Length: 181
Image 1 (cartoon, rainbow, N blue to C red):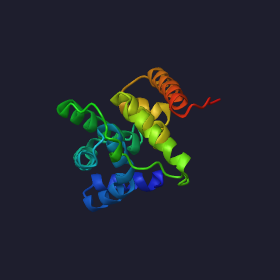
Image 2 (tube, one colour):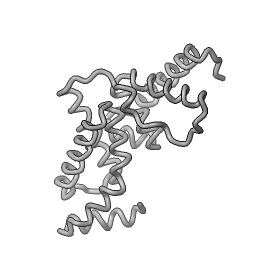
Image 3 (cartoon, rainbow, N blue to C red):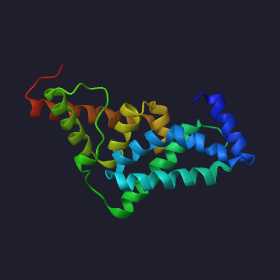
């Protein structure tokens, strides 16, 4: 969605044309759901968190000042809702069957094995690291945007991403008996 169109929708919703909010929902529902699934690990719970996040965003839209982009502001709501859910439910692990397949890979046996291994390694990361990896690698957010979403410093995010890459490299090397350059 073009930023100009997004800003116009927000302005009109703030002025009372609430039906236009559905355009924002349509645009952000899939990436928001993906983030929720990766944080909480359960598709049903992720759907509830995602819906709750859109309701929170709708109710708070009148306070949206546009200092950050809408996506950054909204994903912060999604992230906080998912983390709050985890704290309440105390979910520690993510069942692998709940992860959607990583798109764009061919259905060769080796690719399937590698995808499963990557999903398993990501699922074993602490919740904050799962969130950062998802935001950075799967939802293509910048370090700066992730900082605004999570409230962590940019240097902390870089360190966490570096540690996650090292852990993933080690685990993949161990499981596949391959030296990755």
